[in-house]
Image 1 (cartoon, rainbow, N blue to C red):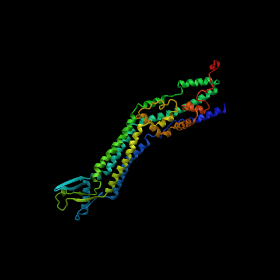
Image 2: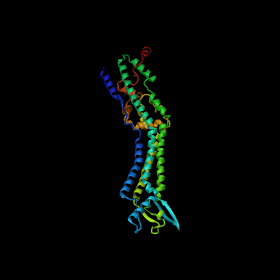
Image 3: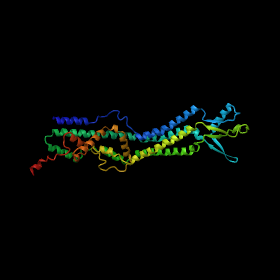
Image 4: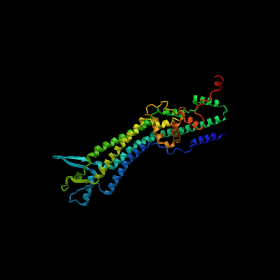
Length: 392
């Protein structure tokens, strides 16, 4: 065995990917990075603001302070605070003998509305986890495995070609068999390509993804409506007039008709409202960007894997409308690029392919590795069939 053939065998052996068996791909990402950020912010920020509201309420004591008459005892003053906080209704004169009431219940419901908002924002995450993740994980496991296996098959094929060329005493026979194999497409393993082509006709994943982001936009709009309708009207109202002349106290003459109370936690209410508006205003462009990514193909990832035999989705123009399951799978393949060991090898080969002087003879990784192993990727021009020499 010559040193050239030995070096070629070593090079091809090093190019083979390790066989990953057993518990593998434990770190598979089943959420896109931006989706994960949206989830943490949309769900976490209401919980954080709710903790702030509860902490401020516990540290400050009573959330309101009423200006009770001076003849009231301490217990009577405490009763006024408790009664006004329970009712939380502002009384004002709307005209002669007319009394207008306005409820201030959003102050009391602030922590619970934030909890409800967090639960509402978590519903799209649950939808994705139960409706899309099981099918997506199986698709990714199969596709990642097949991409790496297809790369390894190509390298083993070049190893086999090198052994046949070394054992063959007649180069004409070797090149005739090689050209016949290329013509009959023996080097191609079309299972993966056909599977991906089928995914173009499937729309379950993309429908779930669209529904997830649409629900986020819908719930964000609902949050805006809630804040605008209920919070804006009482946003600057720090004091309100409370009436405690109800029940047994309705006929008491020494009890005033209205008692002025002050909301001690108005600043917290304002901070929470403004923070919620700011946070979800920032999230809206991110959610819209996530949706727009479904309108274009990740052709860079596909172009790298065009080096594999029978993976010519781009060159054969098999890509149609990008709103299908295949585009969603490509986005998740990009997010799990660290699990695709073959991607780094094929990326290097793509760069080397652009610099080689025989671009017209190199289409796949088989052609390129054949060239690196010391074989011509196609039949040399100086080799002609013996029959041609006998009949010039």
